[in-house]
Length: 134
Figure 1 (cartoon, rainbow, N blue to C red):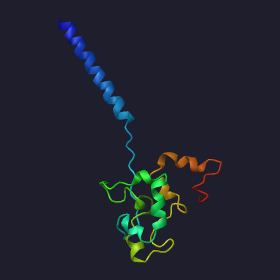
Figure 2 (cartoon, rainbow, N blue to C red):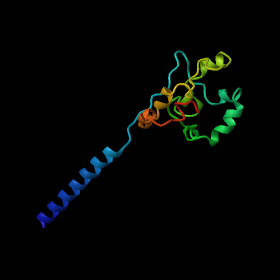
Figure 3 (cartoon, rainbow, N blue to C red):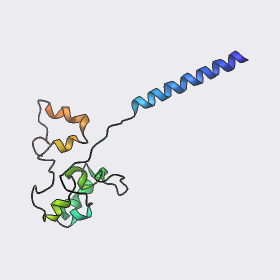
């Protein structure tokens, strides 16, 4: 009876170790660092709405709409500023093309902050729409 109990305990212990090792090796631990603009702070999506109403209306249908979260725990991890960086200086300057804001269409490095897994694809010999500004 002791041998059976010891064998069962050993099997259970081995099973737990295998499960633990497998689960730890399959967890995605990539950390995306928020974009940085010197001296700027995050202001939230509502600040973008005043000047970019047409874009913000179309945003829910975009591929990046899933990034929007009102419950984000870290500033800049969701919404407009997750791709364009903190917008306080852009808003204070009254906007303007390229003024204190990141344009991922022109600076693909901004895309690689989150899309590290596909960065190599940008170097393939075929065309890539992001690199071509599309």
